[in-house]
Length: 400
Image 1: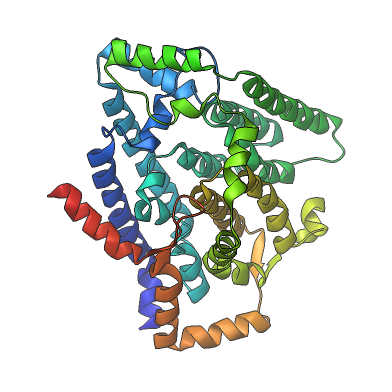
Image 2: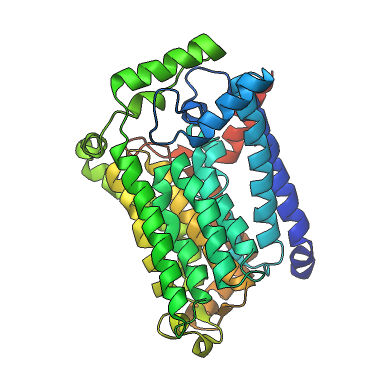
């Protein structure tokens, strides 16, 4: 029976992903035109009130809508459906070749991964999805491009990503890891290329930090949307005039309970990946200086640390948990698929094997850890429960 499950794992994976994708379509198509949909409101931000943060894609949508006369929000909906489909395709592409085992299932089904935006609709359709999507696309070209072409490709895809959402800068180290793997220590030009790319990215961030919208800029943008495209601005536009200090001040109300809840969410959501990391070594590490002087645990920790910064500057902890976990998980399995990682037998492996051999216990653990709860969007909200059930109930509500 277990061998049959392993053989059919890609089929089960595909069914699960199609299930989630269809529900994504249902929720997006039923909520995209609601004025209180903050996710869609983010995509409406544009440059009609002046250059500023997060406006690149919104301006492109505005211009397309003006030329084609397609409703602006409908245009965004079509784009999100396309993006969601490509995202799920790359997820399937990565995980279909992974060997089925208890920890892999625990990692993949974590409530911090792809099920989160459906369990917490406030996160569905956000710009956040572009970061892991661009990462998967970037890694898909890793084997095909040399250092210089890969560097140019990174510059090509990450520069617009920063103009779309500046929070992307905290996830850049994941991209750099694969770029540096192609780094030639004896070639001075490699150092120069890395330096130039880093300067360009930092300049973009500096430029965005200096391009703060005023209240009049926001009003000008919103008036344009209403007068030219009959579309209301959402919450996303009205936070463009806020400073970093204003965002941080919103976190002044964090209580001890909020911190404990956050730590618990991290521990339970990451438990499968943590266990998997500690039974993993680098493969052929002697052939690469970067790998030779590190371990998978240290490497992932160093890449993960910058992703903690958003927790200190914005209240949307659920989104940051989702992004941090997604990037760490994708990084792990992309490394595994590229033969950078090898899973070894150690004390953790033996204990996990004993649990996985106990079918009822492993089933109960999968349900409790993965499907009995989910984090909410904002740090002070309590934990949600039974996400799959609630996803189905909400879809029925929206459909009928």
